[in-house]
Length: 198
Image (tube, rainbow, N blue to C red; front, side):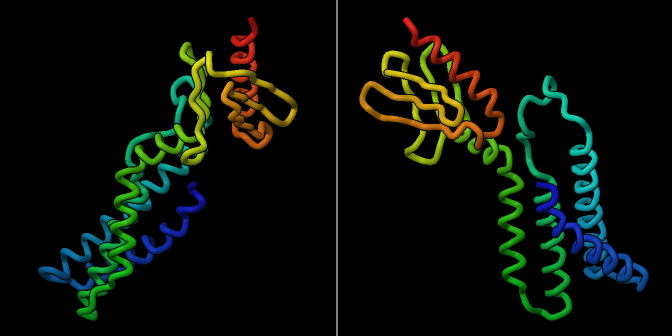
């Protein structure tokens, strides 16, 4: 994820340099404000990127962080700020609105603000839950499976496939080696299999 965002850090360095250069020229009014915005937005992006790298290098403590971070994505938000500053600078120099840059900035700002919701939805779609009621296997739209214990005919756990067969004939197969945390999925399916054994 961090590697994908490296491409956003390079423009921040360039914009930071442009802001510092503009400040040295003694700007006034809107030019001064633009230089400050360029420096601040770039510094925030570079700082959030450095923080993400430090955080990724620390060993994860599963007890403290059982799931991914579900807040906003500051890298995307500060990248949007850098893009808006670039668009403002372009407009200031050429008097033309850089629409693609603004559209990308709006998209990144939206993704950054909705980051937690997007991750929660993604995790729900890729989850297996076994509880007192029955089991739930996430998946693509219309492929998820939710069944009560009385609706399940069989659960088979083989070397490659985990197969859930419902009494109505519906079958859901999971390619176990292909799953992240496959040993947990295998253990959950084996526990669910034991519940079905009379």
